[in-house]
Image 1 (cartoon, rainbow, N blue to C red):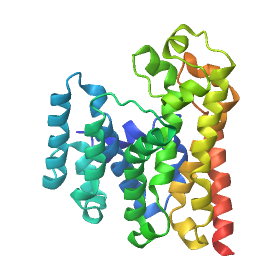
Image 2 (image 1 turned 135 degrees about the vertical axis):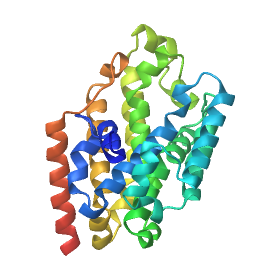
Image 3 (image 1 turned 90 degrees about the horizontal axis):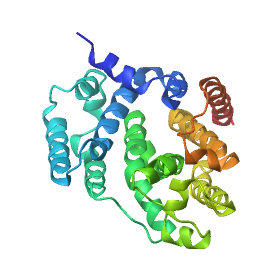
Amino acid sequence: MERPLDWCRERMLGRGSPLAASLHFAPEPWQDAIVALRAVVSEIAAVPDTVSDADIGRKKLAWWRNALEERAAHPAIEALVASGAADRLAPERFEPLIARVAETLESPRFEQTQEAWNHCVALGGPVARLEAELIEPDDLAAVDWALPGGFAYLVRLVRDLGVDARANRWLVPLDLQAEYQLARQEVVDGSVGRGWDGMVRAWLEDSGRRVVPALEALPGPVRWRQRHLLILHALDRRLARALARHPRRILDRRVRTGQVGNVWQAWREARRLRRLSRN
């Protein structure tokens, strides 16, 4: 029988996954816990994609809520328990994520870029907060850890715009659509102009500016303790740069960054953080 942690690793550490490149640099005692945590979050976040009926989705999310409380027999939860993460993260700490995922069962629409950013922080932020708490609860006060989590979510939202447009999901805020004269059907048809390139680059740049100042102000010791989150953020920035360089590749594929380059970026960021922690 497959061990729960092996089940999580198989799903979370596939070649090309940023986690496969970053995990080696995480504090060794917490590596299994990080994989288990991210597997649980991934399962919860995937609920809207597994159902066509919102009521069924709400029932699935209710199951997850109860499963976390009761430590149910699910591989991801069993791994959370076996790794020690369940003892450090109370079930109610997952509630913000579950509540926000429930809201996305009805396809969201945004009028303003700020609304889209808030959506990304609400969905991507909890896993970053939970990991920071897992490593060192006192570090939660150092910065709003939801910001890098929100950036990670937004980068993937932008990456998937072409795929989502063909599936009749369109999350570009109305203010960006108006500013860059862009419509979903143009993306579906592959007939976008320079407005598409400008929109992708501006959206990614705006989101990056929301995160960098907060992280750069972190004290060196906090940076080193929470290095795994910061290394993942460096990998997210790498993906964002790849999307900004060639925005039209997004139209017909899910752009990914290479594993060798990801490992190199993770190593460089780990060295930088170690150096800063000594200053």
